[in-house]
Amino acid sequence: MSSMSLQLAARHQPSGLNSLFNGNPLANGSRLSFADYVVRNRDMLRRAHAGSADLEKIVDGNAPFEMKPPAGFPPGQQKTYRRGVLLTHGLSDSPYAMRHLAEFFRENGFRVMAILLPGHGTQPGDLLDVRWQEWAKTVAYGAYQLALEVDELYLAGYSTGAALSIYHSQRDKQVRGLFLFSPAIEITRWAALANGHKLYSWLIPSAKWVDILPDRDIYKYESFAKNAAAQLYALTRIVHRQLRRRALDIPVYIAASADDTTVKTSAALEFIAHARHPGSKLVLYTTEPEKFRSDIPAEKLELVNSVFPEQKILSSAHTAIVMSPEDRHYGVHGDYANCVHYYPGDMEKYKACLHHPEHAWQGELIEKNLQRGVLRRLMYNPDFAGLKMSMRQFIESLP
Image 1 (tube, helix red, strand yellow):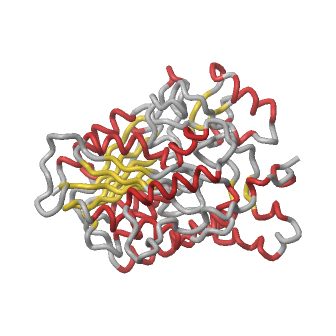
Image 2: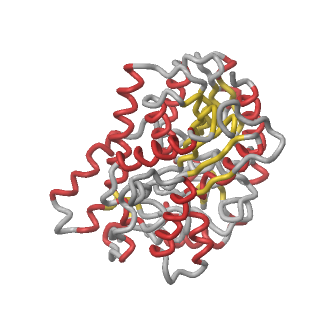
Image 3: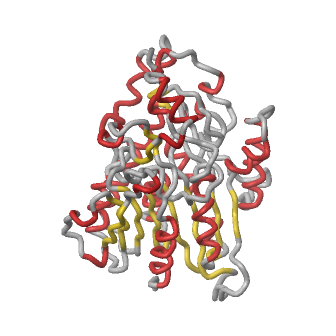
């Protein structure tokens, strides 16, 4: 039995609450403040998850949020704060994925705002109708609100959030630099055809889905709509056209896994190779740093070993870069395990992956890792402390 033959649940239909940008102006025509945007989205999330156990926990993790830097950092010369960063999560994720990065930026003197992309945080069905332009509107809104408070505006994005950050930076001259994590600069071409299902999905509703899964994770969808892939592909095509017309001349920091199975890491290598700003840098997690060869200048490329045998970690993964090992949900002792690659085709391994971590390896879903035995997709970065140190050095080098 394939996941496509499973019975569709209510969560696989749009909720009607979150397919459009949820930050439109107030009734009197004034622009919604970011604080009010957060309140509006928290109220929407409470409606979406009404009746759920741990409702406030779910709302807290999926909601947009903001942070102010601690006392002691120099204020801005023209505005309240010197630096600010807008955080944008990835496809099927939520702002929860950006929490540890947010705390890092706050500790380093940044005013922080994190947005919730339309279609996310509620139920997987909300990705059936969403368009990437609604995501872009949300990023533009967040950047506008943050720019009201800071002299220097930076964007930080994970996966799809990275693509949106690049897109916005090409349209907003106020953006001073980018932080990109597992960036979705290029994905597979099959995604361009993902909306071909519209010809027949009125007969077979499950045809709208790449995967129909249990959705155990309260901060990330496991089920995946074809429309979501199609929207991301359309976005990446626009970003490529932008970059062909005009290369970025602002400093860019990238962290990525060489073994990423979600996006093409080769695109990140090409991106950094052509980055104009001399301070730009790529941190690449790889299983063979000593064998890695590249024509990228050494000052632009930092290779980090991603194998930790004592922790049964075989490689890094697309899902691992931005998360601390100490995270209570995704970390070493977290309450969630990513095992959906076994569902429903191999339920024996699925159950072993969920319930017997002592026997499971961790890493990216590549063939050589899967052949080792039961494999959990790695959800945290065992070198997160090293990543923070590298980012701090990059920040200190900013003009």
